[in-house]
Image (tube, rainbow, N blue to C red; front, side):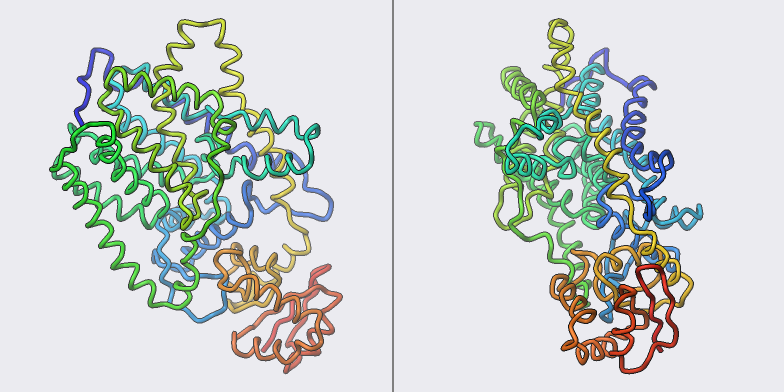
Length: 524
């Protein structure tokens, strides 16, 4: 693939373009900042988490571990099973180091990591676009679309009160911004932003001939290895995009460049071999082996939502794609291959395809940029309506995120009283409900019998067992066995069941500490 010759309008973007990621970062941080503007509901406490508390608390538990040990290999705090600690999460490790240096809490460090992650993603994108668009105005148009373009789902959600209940529920669930239907939506997750930035650094030398050199290819392979341990779904996407590009070119009657494809295969193969070797070592630990299989599954979202979730951007991308084909743009096969690869990954029955949705909007923004720029320049009478439909979703998503954060980011104050009680105790294994278990490792060094839905092996059965321990007299013998085998040192139960649970233990608790509607039992 040849690279366009740079014209007079090429060169560095003006410094003012940094206002684009700055605005995105501000809008994405408004939900967590808003927690300082309004008190929590009565009897509740804000966690400081603005999006998807269950998952972000799990991330925070990893970040917090770096305060104890600077090694990048983490243990799984959401199980009390013995383990050696072989989880490698490089993004969380870097955030943890930042928290360790600055003294910030794990939750605060993770929330504020969103800002540098967004800036890094836009910097990588600006660099990635230079071989595609020699003119600054097309690159600026792409950056604006990446920053703020959304579908029309946010507008349709305004009509939910008028829709049948089943339709409204399906619309809410399937078009949730947390799937990353637009890039603005996906910027809530700093892990995605960082993964996308690294993915762009890997893809440029692999896709564009003029960007290739031995050093660039070696660097791409090394970064792909890193990417697998930052965000494996992005790494899989990068491999699929690289492989799909020559296939799409061949289907569209473009003869493959065999030397380039062989070099790309060697780069991907080397990264995969290195990743596989490290993964084999990780799999020797039974806890890692039991917790790391979530990439396979059949949970996905239908491509039939594209007219809604892409909206005007999808129309502009179709127009831009036709134009790039007509003008024989050198990047057309890479962009078409990118779209084809992600659509395929999203629909494969063996993968949890929803994990790849956030990788789709970027090539569409690139394809749409010239068409969008010309539309706004030549048809000013359409600009107002198109702007509302194209960019209004970002504002509506921000308003909704600010509103919902105050609900999803709060927990009962008694829960935090119990957490604060255990934060002063030596590290040990805790038997708690899944809800308490999801929170406890983010703020303390304790491990839990059951906690996060994904990181706790046998989560469903363990959740059922905890309920039996608290309410079923027939489970007393199993409770005592679990406490012994799992090395349980702390038990947190509803205060109205504390006397019963304490009486079922093999030995009475050394200490009982009430925390409102919860009670902490400290065992021998």
